[in-house]
Amino acid sequence: MKAVLLAAGKGERLHPITETRPKPLVPILDKPLLLWHVENLQRVADELYVVVRSQDKEMVSSLLNGYNVHVIEQKDGIGGTATAFSSLPTMEDFILVYGDVFYNPSLLQKLANFDNAIVGKEVNNPSEFGVLSINDSFLLSIIEKPENPPSRLINAGIYKLSKQIFYYVDKISPSSRGEMEFTDVVNTAVKDGLKMEVIKYDDFWIDIGKPWHVIEANRLALERIETRIDGEIENNVIIKGKVVIEKGAVVKSGTYIEGPVYIGKNSVIGPHSYLREGTVMGSGTKAGASVEIKGSVIMEGTKVPHLSYVGDSVICEDVNLGAGTLIANLRFDENDVKMSIKGKMETSGRKKLGTIIGGHARTGINVTILPGVKIGSYARIYPGAIVNRDVQKGEFFKPWP
Image (cartoon, rainbow, N blue to C red; front, top):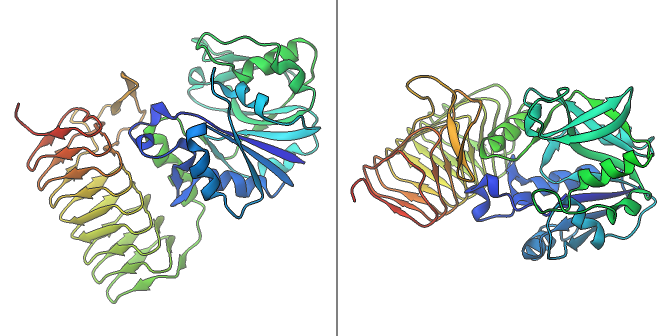
């Protein structure tokens, strides 16, 4: 069995997270999503091809050093998931996975017995995905983002395919988005008579396409951890629920932790910190004296030194929050928090959502950040500022003109 991982997405909807890292390197429990995929696929495949953008190839190749993986550079030109096939060798049969989905890897074992199959997942917002039209257990077509979806069953981005699919790659034209879409390849093949079975899947799954999905994917992973404490725990620390504390981490006296919580290598927590459920502290992070963090993803090297509150947020790598930084995560009217995605305001579907802060940003003391605000990488926030709008990459935000 061979496997192909399509990891050449730009990740523009994930900004500012992807301003400083490729989309495949977004972390889940401090481990890049790409590595989750590689480790999952290597359990069922003896040969794995990872397709990446040309600008990401060096970084991905370095990350995968030591793994038996072929890193394939997607050729420049028209983008889209089908473009990758021009860079791949023809394979007898293989598993194909989109690089931005997170799922239970036990699913992959079920695919081995099929010639051509697509995984379908029922969701509450099918109009945001490709919806599957089926007859009995066979695919009729994939309808991309329909206004009136015929069902809640969507394309989960996981396939088992035979070499016949390569024949149809050259039969399609660019989509309305100007890209060569693999779903068009599948639709063309099915219309021509290729039988593709639909495997209905009811375990955990998420498409990491928008910033708050990083919080949700990490939460899915947290819910499946078992307590493991390899770091140092000082006296008078209270731990409730499931917690992973990696080697080299130190949890100082007076700290209170409510799991599920993950604390990465060489992190420092406390003294007198409060880590609430759903928190992920990446490697080399800090939550200092009298800091409270709830339901947030704090990426590697970021410091929240003292007297700050972080709720339901994503704070990227090497960020430093000044003392007294407060991140609001609930609107006054208690409606769902909205966030700008590629210039368009979209609802997150979440009552509680704080901020997304890009890598290497800094805040001064006593900064307040309102719900749904995004702060670009390398931005600087002036002391005492109330951040009530998005801050662009490298911008110096101050509360007066």
